Image (cartoon, rainbow, N blue to C red):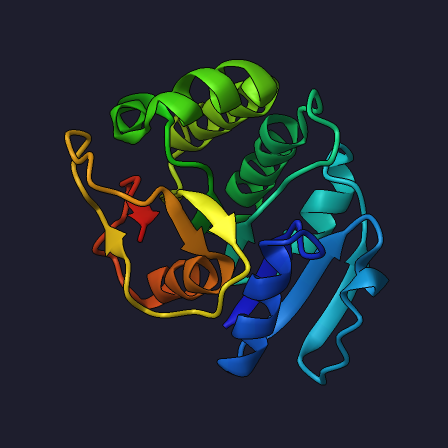
Length: 208
């Protein structure tokens, strides 16, 4: 498939790009400085752009089959997720590109009940409160669209190798979670959704 990956140089996006290339997809890696990927592949096109610029977002999406979003920022008060995703959704609607896989975070909406005290009140309640709010707004934008979307809600990322052994799609009442998961497992799951409609218009959580 012809894929566009937004946030391609981030800690999560990099894994999505590499895994997508391994699976034989044609990948457009969109980021402010895509050369930071340091990946050379015949199926990889680097696109330098800013998701705050709607026209550059649309140019990257045109002619693609699906879009994967893994936006993030080192600036804790940045609105890159919500603003960028709004531009992505608008461009997809205008261009007729339907399939969207968007990485959010465990804790949004009903999955708040899956979190423990540390994540509820210290991390998302204090340190990452602006980041969390941005994820909430991001999800709202995706859900209001008429796209064929799946929102993936992973627990906290780790740098461990992929295991393929994690829980997914668990109810909000589930408390027996480690609240962590390898980035490589999340990337694999996101790409699996391209050929599987099981979680179409759903928000599966992922955690070991």
